[in-house]
Image 1 (cartoon, rainbow, N blue to C red):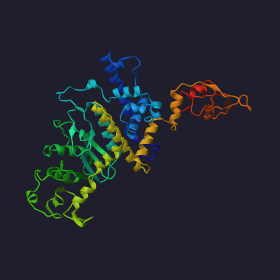
Image 2 (tube, one colour; image 1 turned 90 degrees about the vertical axis):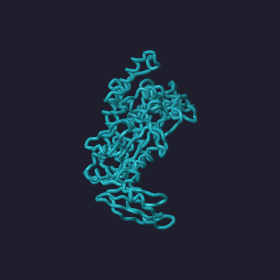
Image 3 (cartoon, rainbow, N blue to C red; image 1 turned 90 degrees about the horizontal axis):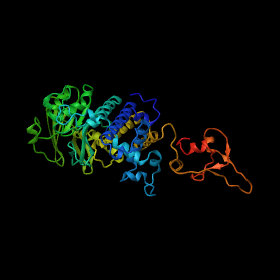
Image 4 (cartoon, one colour; image 1 turned 120 degrees about the horizontal axis):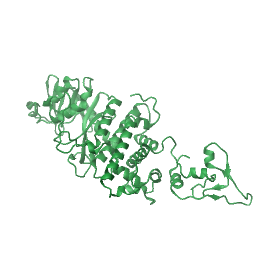
Length: 476
């Protein structure tokens, strides 16, 4: 996608979070709030002035504050609005009240609940609440970028410990409990080209053009890689997906594969399994395009590959130089794309305790879009860390069209009580005057005897319109 004319980080992010998606979220949030209040007229949110429809500009402010919480983490949401010196962060109070933030988060929605089919219906969708977001981002991720040759498929886990039918336990992940996602990532950058959210073991995945004999794990792989067939890609997977049938089928459509294998998989050569090896030794068998390798390191390692021949590479270790199969070396080199993506996101994930799983997953997907936009930002020749990139997006969401103001000054002049006063006289000047700050910002030279003693820097201000503008507008 052409990005040469993009000037800001937000433009890259809005390749994925488009104006249409903003409009959808705002419309569905307002719809859900109306439905809830109508159905619960005695609830807290039905009280006068508790809810007013959210706008696109207000949702952008809400989104900016939410993303900021991933950079500056606090244990309790209220701490972001606390005036305690230990927690004081005036930016939040200046941008939005805590009550308003909480009510927007309460009603944030992506689809109409009334269109959801009940359990047991043939068209029932466990991911109905975030299906529009999933479909939108999945399409945009694939359209915006073409990954390089080496790609990989692996799982990520969005932490969630509440009650949920699709919750998974993966002991190898740091979160261990949560919503599982299958990702196809580019190894070099960690860009997520395609993804799928796990819907439960009873969900029936039937990708177009996928033969039935591939099984559940093979259908997941086919669903993710099908747009890349006949383009010369090298796919790396772990032993959950690796099978003889899958590798042969992908070879026929122009995708070469390499992956660790379970010796119990159907079709894996028994002769290779029964071969006893000393540490550092290897054995291999070839059948047409398929190579099966057994290599003894600290334990037996089994691989299948349609990429490699039975060759080795020399690797330097602390104990000396060893001979390692090239397939094992390349697998270790190219399999880490999903892990790299997770490592980049981990320090900035917005993690809040909630009973509503779809809010956690939706915020995670938005942050995934931010990382993908950072990859495009870097590919366009821009420099800067992922942290600085996020900070720029947050600034543009909170302060559109202007420079970031001094936040303590904003909090003071917009959210506290102020009263005008006249400059006190001095022995040399009975009625001193200073230049009006608002007039100066507008390019006018106008002196006044009035100032605001309640602001930190006590600016001179013309009584009336200038005083009002200074104390009600962020960019006056």
